[in-house]
Image (tube, rainbow, N blue to C red):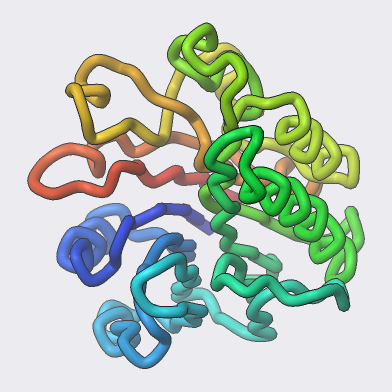
Length: 256
């Protein structure tokens, strides 16, 4: 099973690129973030024409997450399933695809360490872990993927000195990712690229993509049983090139 995650930064603006990419790369499951669409505006028929079932959780011009699958799509859950307060934003959707329970997540940005949005981000990450634990056991086939807005380690940042005291790299954010791993998840990309400085997001400004000034914040976590099936992981930099790209590139993993 080929699974991918991609923050498309407006599906309305990027639908043609996404359709071309699906035809070229042929993922079995694609998780998308920042669709920026209401549910009734989601182009389900376009994906159906390509052979994909779809599930979308949106709220209009902000946020929005989706899963499209050609290996089945059942047991759809929108928002958190831990019994806590629902997130007011459309940031998480979960479904079973090809025997794997997959969550597509768009973690809050955090803005700055002294902003209330940063505390919201930390609460959100804690609730994500409770959500995963409420639906699964660590021995299950589980993938949690999407735009985490956290670079797990300094190797995931082009120049750590430029992010001192900033979000995306703070110890508290990274500790939440570590806690998810402690529950039973594995960073599938790092399993295959232990020392690679490869990124998934580049600012549109100042030629950051071409200058290599990026962050690895689009992550694919899998339980141990999924990690044992994972034979390949890559960032598709080609999808960040060309006319009007998203500022994120897709991340692809192949499972046997």
